Image 1 (cartoon, rainbow over the protein chains, first blue to last red):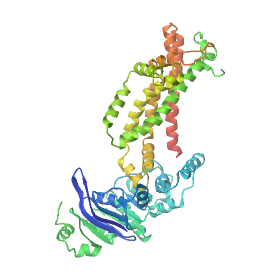
Image 2: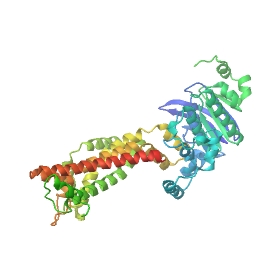
Image 3: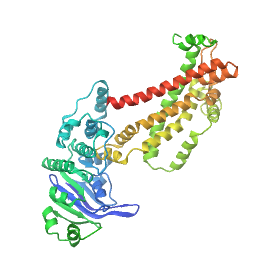
Length: 254
Length: 239
């Protein structure tokens, strides 16, 4: 379980996330909804264990992440994967991109040997890479250059890249905001597949219908902390917080 | 020297007053000095550019202006400073480097480092921040992230290296001062490069041979540029 407890983060003394508590269990999908600029991305970065909060604690299975030494923290954050909203693929083939997480987890002697071997002959692709691409329906694009993909395909490859090294948690920042319905559907299927494999998934989205479709729990972020978090149905049908109710019904306009 | 192609063919065009082996020896000295200087400079400059690009440290602004000034620094002044450094009274005096290839390598290193650092810095900081973040959240260590950034910036870094090589191999002033433009008694170059040889030929009024050596120098630079560009495109198609 990743547990954020009363975390805050400010950039240039401008508070972005204030006093938010949130936890994610394996095997569940949590959607974070809220208007743009409310700190969803910052929250995900803290969940990814790569951004230190100014205040509050971050724990992974009870291990306080920011009290750990660098080596321990690396081991902890390697149990988490993240997909960004914008394209972030490396200038290489699809296979090399998806393999990246596996590669950095190997020792340097292994990596050097593989590097030499790939100069002499074409390397086989690890099964995990093909499996991850299969989840997003792109196993036929292995040898293609990343920059020749469409936006939707690139986003699906990013998803596969975060899945290939079998993290326990997966964080998705507006994964479908620029995508057509077909690619959106494929990403949503992949999210369900990830949950079925036991991953804890957090999706930041401003699409409330998407949150309703895919999430087990929904957190509503409206500034000043998570306003309300609970089972999807409760949040959408019977929100207890007045601001949540207004946001979901569209009365609260930002 | 069997490789003295120019000495074989050039007499058909102009009278070529050089001994067997002379031209290939000055080509060798030019390449030896420039390639080693540029290789050392690249190994130094790219990490410096990475640190400059992605960390904050006191005096960063100062280092930045040193690099910028260095790009336009007069090479004869660099030659003078290196000459002082390797002379008997200088800090490197004990190594007895005066009028050697090693002294020339030092001065070319000093000349090539500012352009290689500055152009690499521009290339490295131009890499999309999302790509850096992705390398980090996918489990990369600081070194892994740096390697990704270098790989993404590889064309810009290749340009930087070519710019540094161009400055080094076409340089006259400093190599003349620290190297001394020396040949051995049998006419083989010790510290004479293509540029200093051209300067010598022109000063003695042998313009045709100066032109031939100039053509050799230009061909050499173009060939090395073409090889680097070719390696870059091979890597793209070969991956």
